[in-house]
Length: 381
Image 1 (cartoon, one colour):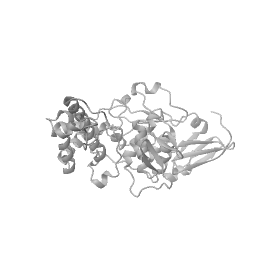
Image 2 (cartoon, helix red, strand yellow):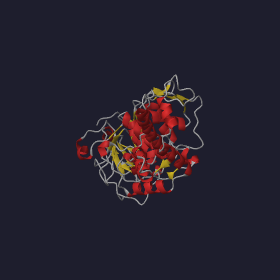
Image 3 (cartoon, rainbow, N blue to C red):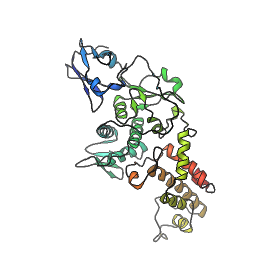
Image 4 (cartoon, rainbow, N blue to C red):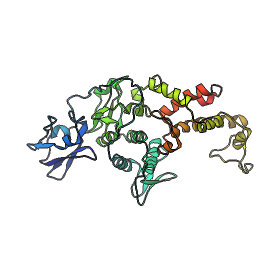
């Protein structure tokens, strides 16, 4: 592809981008580790990039050469898909290994892609991806929570204790997918689908199935910083993070995976007293609970208020309470349980984001409820 005359090239270490500058003032930015041959290169090796004849990029130590025109057309490797060489099943879940400075690109991505702006604030429109994105900005010390989103802080500052990288990765995935910056072609048609746009990155893994995603370069760069990607391949640690999104196109079924089954056993065997007390409460419906939902506004008095119109009959009240209790039970797993750690301590849970509608948390909740409370059917639904 034709391009303007080049002025120079450099590797931007914090963002992981190769930046090619042209004499007309424009630039080309490419995620370095998305290029075939650079995925395993060190920062110092990648930084030694040289410009040859104004049209090629050359890495002497890595013996890698790329035509700038090819990069502009979105060609990052010789093959559309390269195999991820690792075991399908691991002995245990693996934690993400993040790159230094990962919060800054995450903050930039969330700030630029949530509805709203850094000046006016962000609003979530009551969509899960936007709600979780706003929550993440708050957890990263950049915003204050509001009823409909998040308001930028006058003096944003990273907290001493950062939120969990796996939770942050889920927030990035949710937002990127919501905005069309991350798409999931079905595996059997992946080779025939067009890319999302010029310069997009393809990532996948081999194992139970071909997990293919087309990602905007910024999304791919952020996911690399969070330890989700190595080059154009998902890392081993990324797999259980993806369980928490489970794109329908991938047909993921993790419920027979040994890691999931062990996690269920652990969640049942090591349930903390404070969590068991809460579950015991969810499993019972008292007359006071029913009264809260059957009382009219005039008769409610000092009863605990509810956010929805109270049902008029006892049966409707019980049905509503059962529905609420199921979501309350889910929330315990959203806040206090992770597959890599099991039940979180109070201190550990402060780092956790409340990522609701998490398919992994819901699946574990159902198994735990069915095993520990088989007589309370609504908790296992």
